[in-house]
Image (cartoon, rainbow, N blue to C red; front, side, top):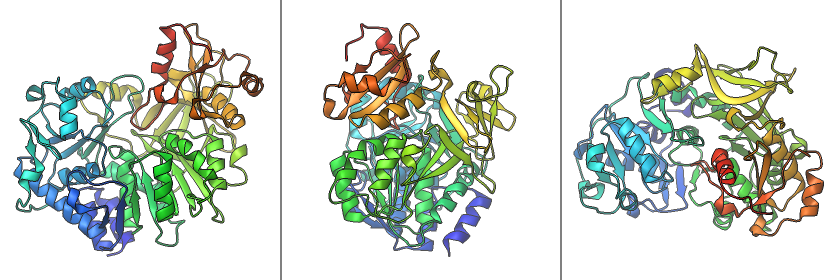
Length: 528
């Protein structure tokens, strides 16, 4: 069986992550999967697997879940310590017809309780550490049963105790019914539960399948994406079906990342924008950890030109490129564009790309005030295609407010150039009076001040734009250099410097801008 044949089948029948490892093993059973950490649910498995071994482990875990009482159509909430076994467990749930509900390990107990209640008596698949965290939550009232992937706790059945359970036949969910539920970043409150079907998951592979065609050889793909995110479904599916060796990375510390990149020399890196920003310092590492990278890829959030430029210049590969995809959990990949070594530093970071061809998403910009959207008068960005998420679980009315026929309103504002490039200026909720684009300010200033590790412009208590900054190693800010860098933005208030560790972040490392704005609206502002 060839990867292209399997891919064609997925486009017709949908993507079922419970079947994916077995399908990938049929394409090439020896494709290697390497981890930078141990699997908690299967500590004896080691850090180097073949896709055939991976598929065998998923089948084994599916049998254990069935023995625990999990059945088709049942919701299984997976809330556990960050680990690559999360994706294996999700595949195992899917393999027996369950509906996967992925929750970020960064969620607090109160939020988890709200989401468990919204799902309605699910099975909770967790671990000892998270059960300790949930000690104040009445799990008996909120769940049907509690299973532990690692660690014994009263009231929880351990998957280890079910080892050797009889294998069961796969159960395939209907193509247009819920298969995997992920959640939004929660930047504005309790996350929304986004429902993905086999059809929508399969359709979303199309743009990335073509991107991976740039790689002629079967070189290593490094993936550093939250294991709970819908993006992880696409990243793993594409890499395995195209027979690329996979390096699954959990650790984000630059020193640990450098060791993995130097050892495995990936040709393709998929990572969060803020992770890549944190790894910029590795561009100066004499071992050249990015030296073999042909393609950097990122989605989730816009990325600063400075970051792209530094990473591309750290690659030795001819024609190295940075491919940015603009999208969100509800729509998948909407538009994209490539940046190259000699021009990335001059790029307009607000230009997030063009619609991708051949059946990919359509994008439009709709007026907010009756006037034609433009750079000076940005409109609402909307997306339409068959890859849109089906609904928000338990919040259909909330979903419907963003849906207008085929079109989904993303919550971002922007405009299109006469050449068709989509410019995303800000989230609508983050717009600040007198500032055309907070993100644009951040792009420009970061490109001039290498000592800044992060810059976030938020609205202050008097509607003024407040730049919140973090510096490399938390060094004091040079105010004279700052003033020169922001000379074109006189509307900015004085900067506020905080340690980077104090930035409130989502599961995908986005800064929670509203939470940051509230912080400075509720207490005296410290000096820079």
